[in-house]
Image 1 (cartoon, rainbow, N blue to C red):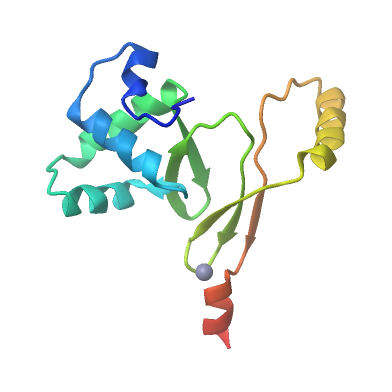
Image 2 (image 1 turned 45 degrees about the vertical axis):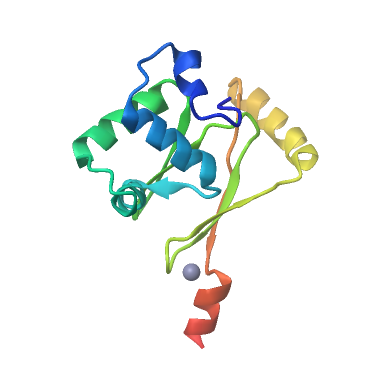
Length: 144
Ligand SMILES: [Zn+2]
């Protein structure tokens, strides 16, 4: 959707080319894993880009509403954002360090199951996301 060029957000949405929007475009373009507002603030701080939290929230809301970003909300973990890619995304989530690891799921296996779910609930499924909770490699070692 976003392609490789972050500046395409504005040509796609026909919205204003703001400094914040471009900065966020670059961040999401260069980040492989879903990130939180705190992560974004950290990156802006390191870039010496002064912007208040409210503006970041407002912008994230705008981009989410326009399907540019996916908002990932989970119990007990701060909201994360990522580029809205058309392919379904699934994750491993470490419940100890809150790390989110995107994974690839064999969609052919899941296809049959989602068709059954769709039929049973009379619900058209556009996309899906699978989330597995557990402990990451690092946290397993700390446990010992
Ligand atoms: Zn962990």
